[in-house]
Length: 291
Image (cartoon, rainbow, N blue to C red):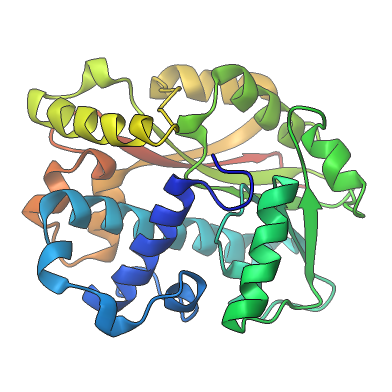
């Protein structure tokens, strides 16, 4: 990753969210700032290119995981009174800048200090205002812990909190993932988290494996290789051991079927959407015991 800007994969995810607003007209996930945050205009999008299998599949999954995460967050706000939201590895996420939140709600964006500095300059350049509810929490995980970084900017561990952690877990070591999930589960006020992950490639069909290997080669070539995969049953066991009592794990193709009238052939065959048969991408919600 270049320290002065978001990672290549974070920028690509933001571009997919932007293109979804044009090609699918935001059908799965509506984000009025998606084009602005990546410096694009609708006329920049080449519809024919974006309907290729590899691009359509990952774009639909990225839109669906964001929709799932924010729907879960709004349930937490409305049903359980959550007023602390943490966006881990915020990159070019726009939630804090476009959401009308209840009074006394804080959104903490956690990212590398240099990446955050770049984002703040870029937001000013493209004309996106920072709301009063937003708090930047710069964390360099080589020298700081997640909770140290949050506590330094006023995070209250006694309040129930919601964490969104998308597009990050596959690029981390299992040790780093365990450390972050353990920190979230340890919060005295209780916590909820949504993150995405992938099954081990050994579980993929041959078609799915070929698609996955092609994408793995692309991200490795830009210095951001896939590092972690999880067997769902073992991951659920780990989460329960950490203290999460509620788990909802949705494989990508099922998630897309919730948002589309019927899954497209492309959506069914893409590794990011769960693929055919077993294996593929998941979006998972986990929560510690509700008060």
